[in-house]
Image 1: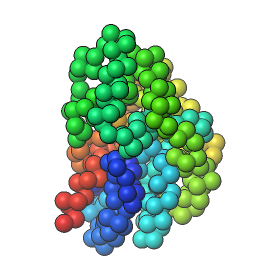
Image 2 (image 1 turned 30 degrees about the vertical axis):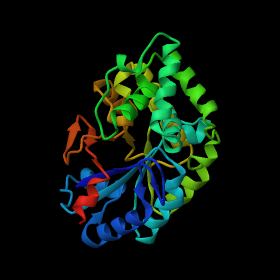
Image 3 (image 1 turned 90 degrees about the horizontal axis):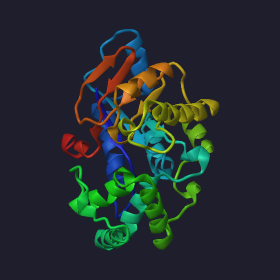
Image 4 (image 1 turned 180 degrees about the vertical axis):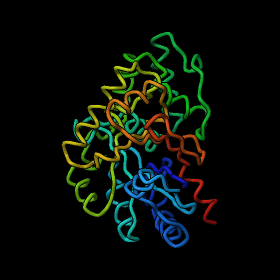
Length: 292
């Protein structure tokens, strides 16, 4: 089974996204050549100790952003298939995730402008961006450093103050209803065969947190989704934000009866950690090559 991870799916964006027309064609090809499997189908196979078909594909979508309701859901419904959507607590607590603030900044402003502004703000605190190491990824070095500093590398009080500064100066829309799916949206999707999973309260790197902090992040998010009757209690799943987890995360999952953990290793293997099934996910952009 191959599991693909999507974030933004839109007709157009200045930031990383999967093009809407391309997504439609991709789902059409997958339903023709593969079997798009739902979370429930996977769980039934696991319970019966049956092999997962080699042509099985699962489509997952992170962060609960509004484009998943506006664009993804209608296409999945059109082709009579299911997706697994990981929903953070912003839908409930009306607070935009830091990661979405950063993405909006990058979508609407040149990285040179943002990075130079960040440098000036850090200089006031006798700091420089280059003091910090950068984890290499698909971003340019400046983009990666800008994102990572505002996500988790800076001391938390400085990081939060800077996020507020950028949010105000660059007029980032704070209306959560414009950015995330509502409970009503999610319930409508559930009726049409979509599945949902846990994605924490604030989208932190779990491996950098204490076990108690991890438990709070996961448990509160889980309880909100259960209260709204959006989860199947027999096959609860969790997607690790940024793919970050450790042994404490697995213990938290066991304590909360969370059966499936979705990570980001760009592999195609699954493994059982004493009752918790860890599932690797592939970046959605790989589909462009697979379906050529």
